[in-house]
Image 1 (cartoon, rainbow over the protein chains, first blue to last red):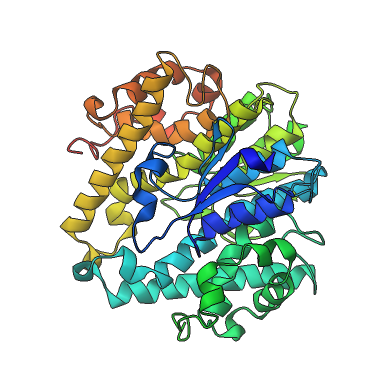
Image 2: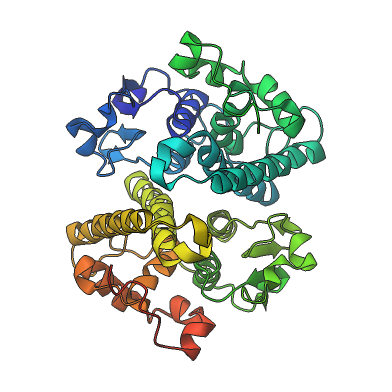
Length: 226
Length: 226
C-alpha cells in the first residue's frame, strides 16, 4: 500500500514532519518520497505545482488521491488505515473531542512560533518593528504557558490528549520540538520540555527526525532570550 | 440531545458561524446559546474563561465535553452524530480526502481575508505599512482565484468538494460570505459569487445568518478596491 504513496517534503518543516510521523505510526514505511530543499526553492518546481497549486510541501499523493494540507493528510491516513498501526483518533466521544481540540489548537502554537522564529524571514526589512516582535514574543510565552498547563493538569507522563499517543501528538510534536532545539529557556515550559524528552526517541519520531538536525545537532539560539 | 449543548458565540465571526451551520446540518436545533458582543469584549468574561482559557468564541460544551476550536467542534459533531442529519464527511476515501483538503485549506482563505479586512484592527497604527497591505491584497486576490478555479473545474452547481454539501462548505462558507458582503468586485471570483448565491438560502445557512447582517443588510466597502 505504501508503495503507491509519494510524499514531497522538506527537512525541518513541521507540516511535513507531522505527515511523516503519521505515516510511520500507521506502519506505512516504504512510501516513496522526494526531499526538496527550501533554500534552493525546490518546492516551487513544476512537479510539485502539478499536484499542488500552492507549490508547498508537504505534497502528498496516494494512488490518484492528492491531499496536501498536513492536517488533512493526517486525518486521511487515520481514516484510510484506521485499524493499522497506532489508533490516532479514539472512538470515545470525550477522548475524541480532546484529541480534535488539541490537534486544531496546534495552529495557534505553530503560528506564534513562526511569528517569532521566522519574523525576519516573513517580514520585509522596512516593515519590521521591535514593538511587533516584542508583542509576538509575549504572545508566544503566553501560548507556551497554556500548553504547559495542559500537561501539568494531566500529570507526569501524559501525552497531549491524555494517557495515549494520539493525532494531537502527531501534529503538535514537530512544533514543540523547535523550543528545545532553538534554546528556549526551560522555565517557560518545563512540562513541554519533559514531554519532548519522552517523545524524541519514539520510533515514528526518530525515523522522521529532520535531516538538518541530525547533521547539526546544535540549533541556533533564536529563543534564548524569549 | 441538543438541550445538553451550550454555545457561546458572536455574530459575524466565521468560526462561530461554522459551528452553528454544523449544528443545523446535524439537526441539533434547540441547543442553548449565549450571544456575546465583540464590541463590548463580552467574550473575555469569566463564564467563557472557565471553559476556554483563550477567552474566545466559539466556546462549545456538550454535557461535560468542551471543544472550542471551531474545526474541532465541527469534526466532533459529525463524528458524534454521524447518522443524524447531513453526512458531512463521506466514507469514500477519494471524496473524503478532498473534503479534508478543502476544509483545512480554508485556513488560508480565512487568514488572508482577515489580513486585508481587519488589517487596521490587528496592526497597531505605528506599525502599519502601505506595502504590507498591498502585499496582503495581492495575496488575497491570488487565493480567491485559486478557490474560484476549484469551482470552475468542478462545474456549475458544484459545492466546494464536489456534488454534495460537505464539511468543506460548513467551514468555508462563513469566510466566503464576506466577499459579496464587503463589496469584493465579482470579477475576482465569479464562481465563488455564484456559489454564495446558491448557498445563502440553504436552511442551515439562513438560520445562522449573522444578526448584524440582518440588521444592516448593506456591508462596508472594505473590498471594493481589492
